[in-house]
Amino acid sequence: RHVKRMAQPLVDSALAGDRIIAALARVTPGESVWAHAAHTALAAVSVGARLGLDRQELIDVAVAALLHDVGHDWSERAFAEGGVAQHAAPHTFEGVRRIAWATTFNRSSLVAMRTALEHHGASADPQAAPPALFSRLVAMADAYVTFLSRGTTRAQWMSPSSALTRVLDLQRASVQLALGVALVRALGFYPPGQLVELDDGAIARALVPVADDPERPWVQLVADERGALIPGGRREVMPLPEGRHIVRALPRDLWPVDAARPAA
Image 1 (cartoon, rainbow, N blue to C red):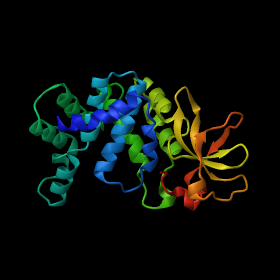
Image 2 (cartoon, rainbow, N blue to C red):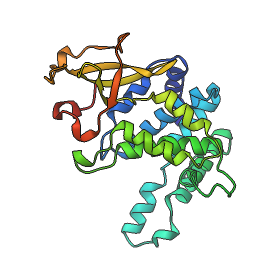
Image 3 (cartoon, one colour):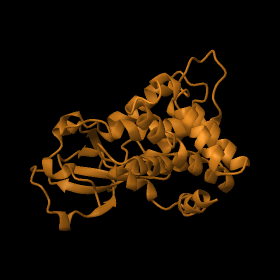
Image 4 (tube, rainbow, N blue to C red):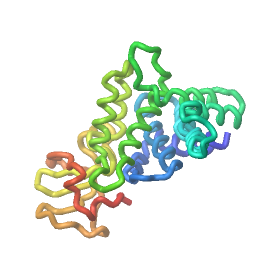
């Protein structure tokens, strides 16, 4: 009940067309378990809205995404303390147990339990019985956020465009190809936080896609056409101007050091 209450504003914002997806630009390596869960829920709800899920379905998706790794803490601590063998307490089974213990059996809790159980098997053998749609949706969102938050050094930190490419590659074997399409429509061709090179040589940060034109995001200029960094207070946010286009997404090792900080 409490988690559903927390999820409702997120779902309502997504359905209202608010640009909340821009918050994914804040995903950083080593983020907390709670931040990972919140970012996964944001990505899953945004993609679910593109799939046409209704409000109740999106609330169930948000709850499942917030709780998908709820078994991690117990299973990892128990293994570290030597209380159980690692294979005897996978966090997916422990997550189901924790959710079942904490609530009554209803549609939302059953979706959350199934998602906790299946989200790591959503890319399994295509000949096997496929996981539920919500499990696949949360698994895809989880994979995207996980790719973004990997790496212990700046050189290892994956760019948003690289993370999107990796997730789409995982989706190639999926029987539900619409998920990959919905992910691109939610994130755009240049996901939130991605630095791009414009046709005049300037560098900009992509923030949010335009609803019906994922190739032309709202951007924030980071460096001018000469390569000079623009001071933070003068970095204007605007739709990609008409007549201008993005030449390429910059790999992380070409990002200016100053621009590596998350956008406001």
